[in-house]
Image 1 (tube, one colour):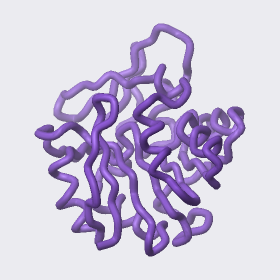
Image 2 (cartoon, rainbow, N blue to C red; image 1 turned 120 degrees about the horizontal axis):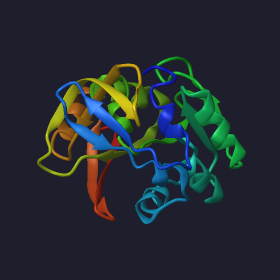
Image 3 (cartoon, rainbow, N blue to C red; image 1 turned 45 degrees about the vertical axis):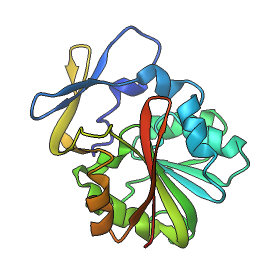
Length: 209
């Protein structure tokens, strides 16, 4: 995605509403307050499932990266946005500015890769994204991904962010629910170990079959 696709949503502290708008017209309000807050109960559930070096892809302002670090795990946040990386570092965590489809630190040696807050949509192709996650993992590693609720289906296409009256650039995006993830995982050489709810949200853990 563009480095400034979510730039407006990374500015916090005003009353501006931020929306992710799909090419089909579907609008979803972005939970900016949550991104800038501390780890919520659902995030804590994901952190508790991590037991080794963890890569937080699309880390944004870094609340998950910080929570993983405070849990005693070697953690690196990754984001294409320089502002997101700066915000994460300001909170005391390690982050790098990078496109996750390009070379990243310690490829093939991560115990966990995490995709929260809709980040399964990065790049607009969940199968390609999950194949990339598989490359980053150790043989016994896992992907922890947040998904849409059962029955929501899947969607791929172009989207943009609207912040107040400002419309950001278009980028590839996708959505995947708890049923559609099985096929996407299989296409990426992964298997769904478990699908689990947490605080009215849904997650899955994917492993090598």
